[in-house]
Image (cartoon, rainbow, N blue to C red; front, side, top):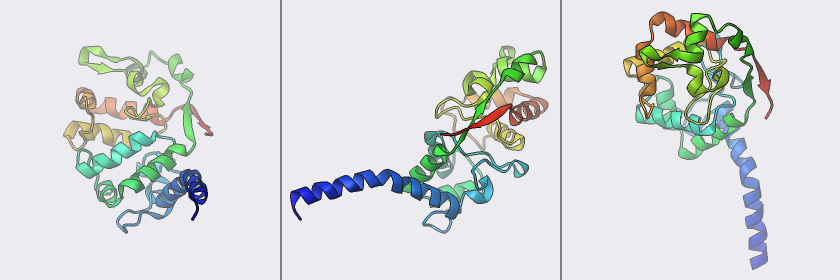
Length: 216
């Protein structure tokens, strides 16, 4: 093989890699990983990765790849616990985690339009979501998770449009210690400061956003 041939073949492999990488992620999502214990994601999160609200399974489509990857690693380490996700995450290879996280991040996200909320800011639940209660050291949810709860970067995931039961379960997991993967322990304090009724109300608030899908 001549030096020129090696250069051409190497260039073709480099160009082909992103497409192959994306295809692997889609295959993992629809069929599962190489390890039989790495089940297909769509069974719980829906064929479009928008979640199954009735069952409390969250939306994954459009979430940041770094956030999704971190959650899978946290299930591996035990800093986040869930009976189905822990063994599944442990069965995925590093390459599979990267591939499926990248694929999910490439799917259509949800753009949150929160003008409706601003109009009802006098409501106690809306006030807690938007402004918090600093007397109890509770920041407004949107102060970390962005306008309308649409998410900010890899550390503050979207709240808007996630099933209320999923959000309640996560806040309760922060409370009881079964989820401890917040490096600043911010959510532990917030969740423990909220009442059961407030947790339920705020979860329902974000589960019913005025939103529309955004194509990548």
